[in-house]
Structures are given as structure tokens and as C-alpha cells.
Image 1 (cartoon, one colour):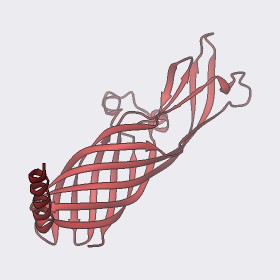
Image 2 (spheres, rainbow, N blue to C red; image 1 turned 30 degrees about the vertical axis):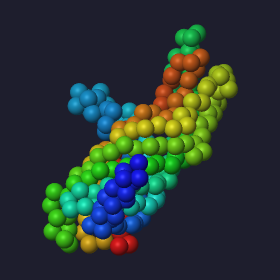
Image 3 (cartoon, one colour; image 1 turned 60 degrees about the vertical axis):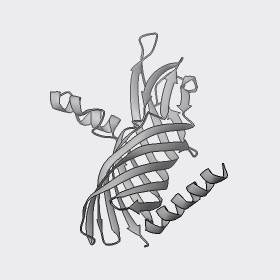
Image 4 (spheres, rainbow, N blue to C red; image 1 turned 30 degrees about the horizontal axis):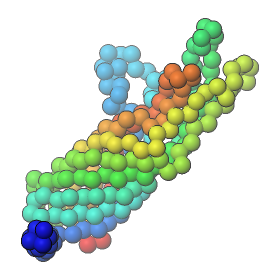
Length: 220
């Protein structure tokens, strides 16, 4: 056991000696429009009302570390994700009555991407990267609220709020670094965390899959 620990310490020491460490901050914008509905767009069934219902915009702020050895790197991130969406949903209940209600969503999550990357073009001043890895998401106070438009008899108390406490997804993308600036274009694939149910039947959800663009600054 002692020999294994000594070897592990030596390997860690050598890795840190030859590794390049960057620390930085970043901000991101993401949109759910596009991933789940590309087929509808191509066959012509996607319209302006579909966009209003499906699109969900969000933002992230946080910090990252990048540990690189040669062309490879590991990049863990700690991000606070937030967003807001208000929209109207219509469905037919068990009595064949059309029900319309307003849904108000406030998104508050802690995201932890753990990325493995490769610099396939490194010109010192500028480099191009590809990366992928898991993304952990934890609920940090997200809320779902409902209001029934005037004239409707449906009681929104019957609606059930289902907000997952934690989820795991996948992140993949490409990036470019220019001096201390870092720009990423990402695709996030993650299960939906926010669902509205009636009698255990899901009525709708907030899209978990998103496209994301992020801008960061490396301190060193």
C-alpha cells in the first residue's frame, strides 16, 4: 500500500510539474430552441406559436479551471444557471373541456461540467479546441407557479409541480482561445428537470437540451 501511495504521489508531482494551470471566470447564454424541434422545422409544422412555447433562454455565471498537459486538458467548472419564462399552455381535460392556464418558471441551478478537451490547433496566441464530458445539475431554488386566465373554471391547485433535485447530462462542443479570452459553442444534452403533471400525467416540461455560447477570461 505504501509503495502504491508513493508512486501515486510521484505521478501527481510529475503531472503538476509539466501541467499548465489556468483559472478564469465565464458567462454563458443558452437557448433550448433547435435541438428538440429540428424535424418539425424541416417538415414545415414548426411556426411562431411553436417557437414561443418551446424556446427557453437561460444564463450562466461562474468560474473554471483548466489543467493542460501537452495538447490535452481537463476543465472543471462551477456555474450558477438562471432564467425565467412565462407562457400560456392549453390542454383538454378528462371531461373534454379546453383548459388554458399561465405558467411562470424561475430557473435556479448549480451546474458542474467536467470536460476533457483536445487542442487540435495550437498557435500560442490562438488555439482551437474540441471537448466533451458529463454535466451535473443541482436544483438551487427553481420554482413553478400557475395562474388561470379570467373566465376559466379550472383550479390550478390540481396541477402538480415536479422539479428534479439533480440530473446528469452530457456536454460537447468546440472552442477558441485568443490570448486570455476563451469562446465556446456547446451542445448540452440533459433530461428535463421541470415538469407539470395532472393526475401523474405529464402536461409539459421545460426543455433540458440547449445550445450555448460562452465567453470567458483567464486570469493566468
